[in-house]
Length: 146
Image: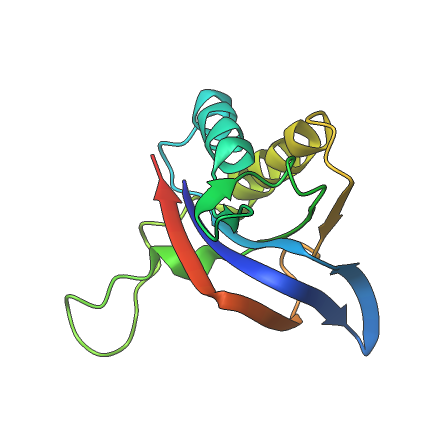
């Protein structure tokens, strides 16, 4: 499982010209699922994400978690995180989990995040053509994987 975590001032996701998920200050998370990933993988990364300290404290040090700042999450599935371009210029996605498994673990990840007492957890729509807009804060972008 791979996460691209972006610290944002705001973010939203649009499907069919309708905003289906939006947040203010928090994390915009792109989530990719690999074929070997399990609920245990998701559990580990949920805890890593929630405890990640990349918000600044009063001394301008990255020392605060999303819970510390009462932040929000926007979680968007993105199988292209498993793109393989070693064989040429056209990416192969054979390293991504099959859609059924990926959707199951994506939904599980979202539900586990909701159990963490985060102010708001918004999502994209699995498998949809989405337009994602964000205002990266910093910019700060962190990759988490297991």
